[in-house]
Image (cartoon, rainbow, N blue to C red; front, side, top):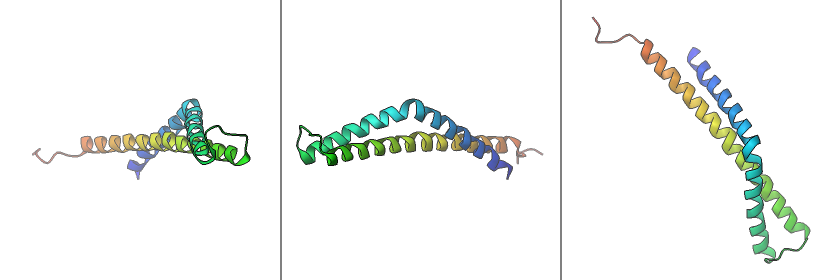
Length: 105
């Protein structure tokens, strides 16, 4: 049970760092990339010079929200996984350092 505590702490720390990075970097970037993809898709469907049609605006808005969601998933999920992996590796390293050696007499 003690071994899970370090990996859980790493998960929480990594998720917190990922959330901070998402707020600082990911919101604007995800919205921008999603908006560009939405504009390209709406331009492909309705023609290149887009008018102020409601459906074209909905396509762009949904695409922007999807971009922000994917950015959040990448930042928060990715950093959470990295934090968990570092905690797990730290647990494994401390267990092998504390284990008795088989070659000692």
